[in-house]
Length: 367
Image (tube, rainbow, N blue to C red):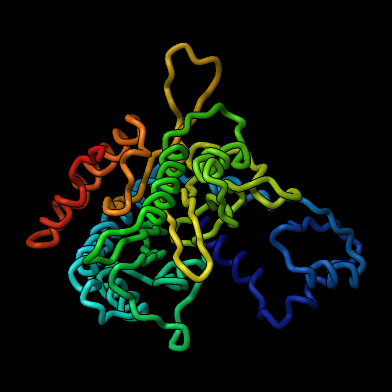
């Protein structure tokens, strides 16, 4: 069987330069093509050869999106080690950033250093978004020598990053306050409203058949109450040692039939939970964890219901939280989440980094 599979693969493999000619040679045949995942040149080549094109979704897309138990276990393992690397970085930032000498590139390089020190990092899952000041107001910012800013004391710094490990792909965003002073009321309000949206989505319970577009409002409603919003999706699918943006699932506003927003969510799918807020020229805020769709047992439930398992383990900056805006259930989520972070990440640390994490994960109280 394995020998036959290898022979079949060898016969089907051709140089990329011959791809168009091979498509044109399919004249007179019915060829299935996924319009969401195939470039226009494929359609052109097939039409040129006289093939009949059948537009349909690639049949492997949905099974690939539903991670099996081995992939889920691998992802959890990757998240545990990645969370420790990120925690070492956050501790380092807490010590060094207030001194005022660090730049965005310095921070990105240090984070890579901590991930590489695991000995298991194969690559970054995308170019690290290391953003200070007004640069953080661009959700998809990429730092280079020309744009590189100094991370100023008494400002917000945003880092969106991830690693590719053989057992999983990570993607996490943390927004931190760089002291030594305290953040102003506006930044605390916006940060807390983003956090409340993140918690609402993390705690969501929903019936089978629910689509990503139906959950998106949960992450935005507290921002909307303040008359503000963010201009990107709330969640994207994530691969398993594959693309960090992997469909078909997505959590976002349903606009013009945008791909993924109307995809039904199934157990085994991994998505990001990343609401944000951006004030042009001033600052940006985003809090992102990865979540896994899982079945939920509800006594007396009429039908199947699902929820999310949070997969990412890293403390969220308590300095920016306006606790008076938080409900009792939201405070409980914070405490439970950070207790879990300490349980998972704490044993991987020692010395000052462990002490810092213990303080960062302490219960959050009003006022």
